[in-house]
Amino acid sequence: ILGGGSALLPAPIPPILLEEKEKLTKMLASRGAAIQELNIVRKSLSMLKGGGLAQLAYPAQVVGLILSDVIGDPLDIIASGPTAASSHSVQDCLQILAKYNLLHNLPKSVETVLSSSPTKPTATENYSHVSNFIIGSNTLALDEAKHHAEGLGYTALVLSAAIHGEVNRVATLYCQLIQLVCLGFAGLGEGPLSDEVRGDLLQLAEELEIPGLDLAKFLQALQGLGPERPVCILAGGETTVQLQGTGKGGRNQELVLRVGLGLHRAQAREASSPQGRCEIIFFSGGTDGQDGPTEAAGAFCNPGLVAEALQEGLDVEAFLSNNNSYTFFSQFKGGHHLLVTGLTGTNVMDIQAILIRAV
Image (cartoon, rainbow, N blue to C red):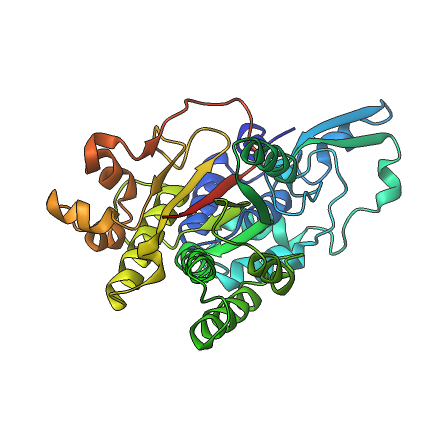
């Protein structure tokens, strides 16, 4: 059981048609619904999701081997939980539909199913014949990446395996984090500017509500780092993109492009910016090898991306306003900044890496 299972195992509750369920899912996704929200709605409309497959298999023993592509590894959300008791009710589904202004724009068949659905989740004791095991996750991937980075001579730190939120706000988080590291490398880790950046970071992290993130503790660890060794900050999770244009892209490529723009703006604001004394690379990619409807897994950038793009006649902000990140990276330097791995055959969400070296 792994990411993509929700789409590959459709069995809408009659009289819902597959096309109706597919359209509703696309509408939710285009309005910025998180994967957890998408799958809560999917479960409410499916015969197999939300533990339905396990119930149909009863009394046979069921063993689920699960690759998690969802923050926090909730068994009933990964692939919409075909072998796990659902912890959500139809009321949760209705709240999500209302949140994205879709409650009064539903097909009649969906209204019929939701109005007749049980109001409470299925009791967990009905799943005593099921054993589920997480065999792959973003946390495991980050641990392996950390080990590899350390082998390359980096001081490696894992920020979180639960990064989520609108891609523009997450880009701001990463830009501020980069700025703080560069200030530390420049010997300015203590002072008004560092205090201001640190305060902004803590506030933004609180607003993003990243599960399990103790940012204050992480920033304390950063303060102890000197410029002697390069730093690798790793993170993972899954951001969301609020679609405004008709371009081609994916959340990883859009995140990278927004970080590139943010780094450019920070450097432009201060002629003697500490960023100028550091080599910086920011990378984001999907572990499944495909970022959105593109051939790339993701992309990488550095602070010079915007200026270099302008020299090629490419306006980063124009591409972003049209959600056209893949087209940008395909044209910029002949696609050199794209990461193209091909499909990996697995999916444990996305991974970001920040590489910083003092110069």
